[in-house]
Length: 343
Ligand SMILES: *[C@@H]1O[C@H](CO)[C@@H](O)[C@H](O)[C@H]1NC(C)=O
Ligand SMILES: *[C@@H]1O[C@H](CO)[C@@H](O)[C@H](O)[C@H]1NC(C)=O
Ligand SMILES: *[C@@H]1O[C@H](CO)[C@@H](O)[C@H](O)[C@H]1NC(C)=O
Image 1 (tube, rainbow, N blue to C red):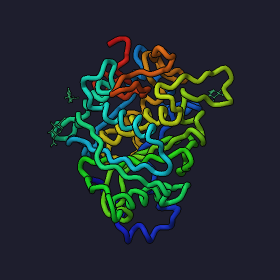
Image 2 (tube, rainbow, N blue to C red):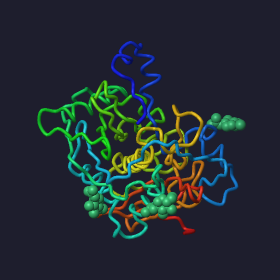
Image 3 (cartoon, protein in one colour):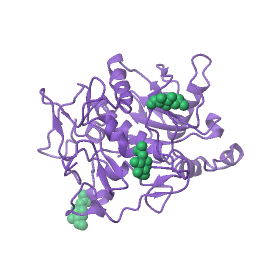
Image 4 (cartoon, protein in one colour):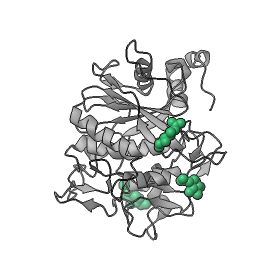
């Protein structure tokens, strides 16, 4: 594990420095390449490519840190107002990751690309992802506007609660903070739809991998719920129909997938990433953001599937269908997913 700032060091720094150096998340994510000039995929890959995101220039490298090789347990923290139907969609998705008997193209087949990443000992990323204890934070314990530091305080509250506290599981636990559509998180909508990082002992008492994903339905669906919603300023672009009738939650699925793929392969931000700068690592899902099918790249999502009701999806899971972005396959050196037409 990387060194984390001890309490004494952290409190002597100004808040600004703390923000700059210690709270930058490992990944921030938007499904829609708003400024294609700054999109890593576009600038690296150009127009003529055989495969989605194919590039000889991407050097996805292993930096010797741990990955999540033991059975992964997700601890959802439901922050704010969540409907049962919304929780069902998200739980079904997480449970689908290890549901090998789902109809192809399946979520479980999508996770196989994540399993290709190994650690120093040659152990692969865990095949098994399951849901552990869950925590409800219905009364917005830290308000309706969270900073990156107060996100850690929400996790602290969940693992230190006097009743039904979440277990401490630094080796194979992922604490998944899900905020309802009336909660703002620092930088949300400003091209950030979710991020992952690890908690600081000075705040939480432990170094725990965590991820945050927000429901953008009210705040910025055109940014974070694309292609189920589209930005107003792009004329002629049409939103596609959701597979589970919930624009905000259906869009969260792909962001949750993105963050889980990255937290599993880079939980302490010292394992798998590309780029020179560990402060802004380019991780296995960053390279494929906005790509859901064959031909995807730039502002094109790639070929997706339609069900009989006209809903758009690209993979099957338990009881449902989902639209999930692809991830970087480091053996093939391109973005891959179970619905690829050439596999
Ligand atoms: C992208 O770059 C081109 C020239 O390199 C420029 O004409 C165009 O306005 C840029 N687009 C955006 C969205 O910045
Ligand atoms: C483990 O990773 C190696 C290297 O990427 C790969 O060849 C192998 O198929 C992976 N095993 C599993 C079970 O995914
Ligand atoms: C990990 O999960 C598998 C099911 O995928 C199960 O058979 C195995 O016993 C689990 N291992 C541990 C240590 O819990």
